[in-house]
Image 1 (cartoon, helix red, strand yellow):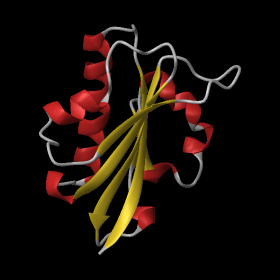
Image 2 (cartoon, one colour):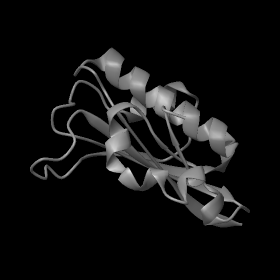
Image 3 (cartoon, one colour):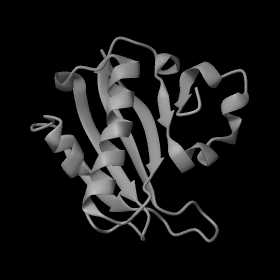
Image 4 (tube, one colour):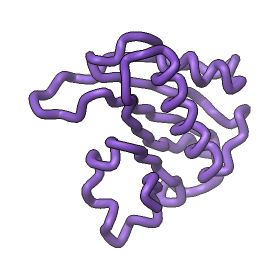
Length: 131
C-alpha cells in the first residue's frame, strides 16, 4: 500500500467561522466522495489559509467530519503579491492501492483559477464546481 497525495482548494466569501467551516467541509466532502476515501485510510492532512482568513482553523471542519485520530496541521499560505485571496487549501495524504494518477483533485469556487490547466488532456483527474 502506498501513501498518495490529493490536493484541494476553495475560496470563502467572508472571514467568518461559519463560512470557513462550510467551504472547507464542502471541499473535503468532494475529495472524499470523488476518491472513495474511508476515514481510516487518511494518513494526514495539511491545510493552509491566506492571511485574510483567520476566523477559524480549517482543520475544525475535518474534526467535525469524524477525523478524530487523523493528524491535521494548519498553516498560513505564503503571501505572494497578486495571489488568490480568501483561499483554503488542503494536501490530503491517503493510504491506498490506487496509483497517483488515479487521484481526483478538487478546486472549488474562486480556487478554479489556481489550475488553468484543467482544460488540458488531464482534466479528468481534476474536479471543479463547473463540471
